[in-house]
Length: 305
Image (cartoon, rainbow, N blue to C red; front, side, top):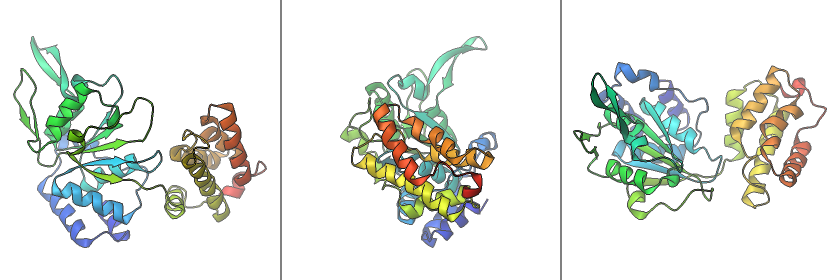
């Protein structure tokens, strides 16, 4: 189970921090019944400084808030941190319908008595998991009130009608938030104060190439530059507000390469993974033109792999 720690060493993360992660894992073993929630992420996170900040914050006992634009690796980092610390993951995606019962649980009738069917936050607190609070800035007041109590120094969950529980000493919560999406709002100061905050930088060319090379080690150098260049072009256009972030989709780019590897023509794969995600016709033309400058229509699988 040292693969994830070796990954930190390869990135040059401070040895003292790695040693403290090892100690954390030794002191807080995962219960066998939730071991299936300790999942290796499909995409590694590259970034020594960000990893060091995040690891130090979690070791100190703090919760983390990862803020930034789309496709900066917020969820990828959260998943990698859970894997590094070997903690069960509980994903909580916020939307306009998320309320306190979605987080804590609801009453259910079982074995001739009313019992609490525990929600993700409750189970995470019990098992010492890492709870990923996705799009936390979409939380309504009702859900936010639960987070206030769960995330502050008291580290308790107090459910009316049930015994209060103390958070497991290994439990941590990692919030993620994008800027300016419909339905999002500013987090209030009281909630922000319960986190240490990392502002996620945009993906660099070096990082992007490492991610693509990790998933597709046999990709040709010319194709690597073409596919990474397309993503960076889209990133620049989105930063300049020339297009939305819909087509700036890292998972879509990786999936397009996967389709090429199966045998689909690169141009068709890029249309499905990138271009067609821009639903506005004018925006789609811009994305299509960018794609054509990077990925020639006549390319076949042999030009990529």
